[in-house]
Image 1 (cartoon, rainbow, N blue to C red):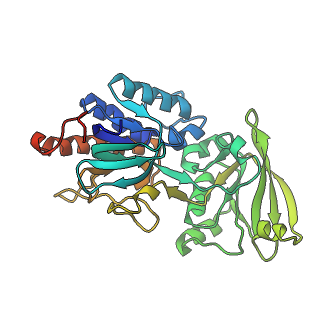
Image 2: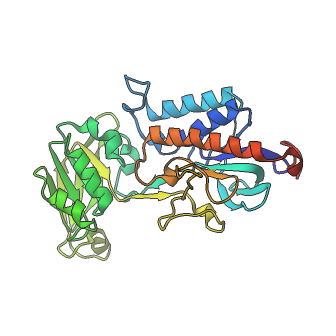
Image 3: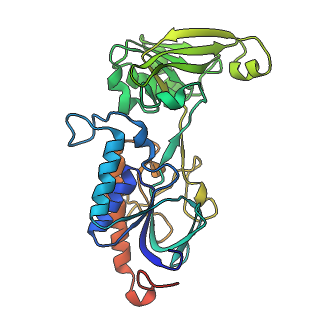
Length: 341
């Protein structure tokens, strides 16, 4: 693989990467999809998806990903395990150094590596993620009609989650490790004025109770008047422990885009690491970056919507943008696919 030059490499095998792979493969670009360290991305942590177009009865996240991979493979996409650790992107071909030790060369690159939700290291969170524990209220809030739920966090992300969940849940309690919110004033005011949302200050989530069969049934919270109770407990300071009955827990402490491998490149990112894409000549947004031949799709460039269907949409856009870019390259200016560099 290291001596060949690919037409197009897609980094990431979540719904954005798979959508790009389907479109690119149908365009006979023979894309190589790098599956990453967690094939399928965040969607594999979701047990039921009810708002993805075309599945009125809902579909499991893993099943949707498996179907997408099968569809892309059917059209000629190839899949390879490994994530990009570093990249040289300003020349043609571009060079990608993988976690497997291999080097992949390509004329075009679609970055669809997603964003990872931040977790709080509570007991049982890995077991119950997707079974009553969620990182996306807009994805899973409707499953909690009539429940009492917790939202963990104190910034705008947590406030947005709480306001959305209040449409469905009987009560929403925001758990924050300090005694004041980090949210913008307008968001904090909306939450404070809502009758069904309460705050649990100077408190952290220690454990989540339940099972994959029954879902989340409760949570253990620790608190201290001066805040940061977990840290204080680790230092031997006495903290207060409380167990509450809840039907759901939502992490609202933000996401981290998986763009660390771009740090030494000229691909533009915002202060949080999300890739910045560029408008076309009419001012309409595209998936293009300022680096020729590099495109971005899905949550890696979207800190706002973070939905499966929007990721799939930008994945198809990236494939079309990449196809247009490759068509502009003169055959004499680049080695053919499969040739040695």
